[in-house]
Length: 218
Image (cartoon, rainbow, N blue to C red; front, top):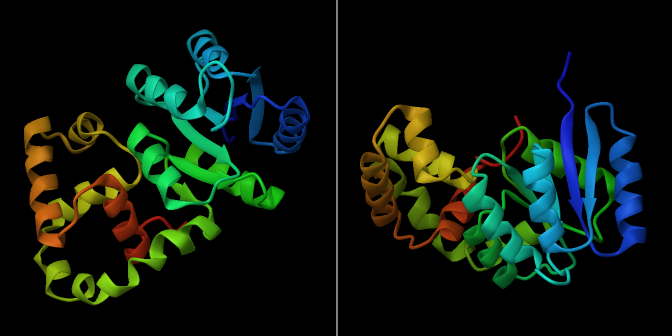
């Protein structure tokens, strides 16, 4: 029997929140266990209810979704976080990935897209809304020849493995635990891989992961 994914919704518009709650409630493998209308309440519910996943709106009062995500990631490294927003620009994506969000879905996307995003992130994967992916990759196309060529071949199996984990939102400490390595070893492999690919940030690793197809569902 499949375990039910326990979800907290953090969204300041009650009508939107109720609609999402009904949508999630119609799924046999998901349930909403709490609702928050601001970032501070979201933090309280995370501590009180210990959810598997938090669906967080970027624009909330008292504490916005970006700040809430940073705090949640620091305090609950194993928590899956899916960002809900109307903004599709690369700047937001950079900030959210840096903050520790595991996925990014647009409010204007179809309901089944939201469910797919929740299920994907809940299973330990990353998710980027397809319309966001197109924009992210738009300025990346010119670099694909280099990545397709000798640089790709330079990556060791371990370096590629670590980059895959990073693209899925895992921290260095979590990767070390998964692979039975020291954090310093993980950091060294990560640095070597990034140097070989000519990338400088987590967002670049995510872009590379998109290019390689690592974030696609099996």
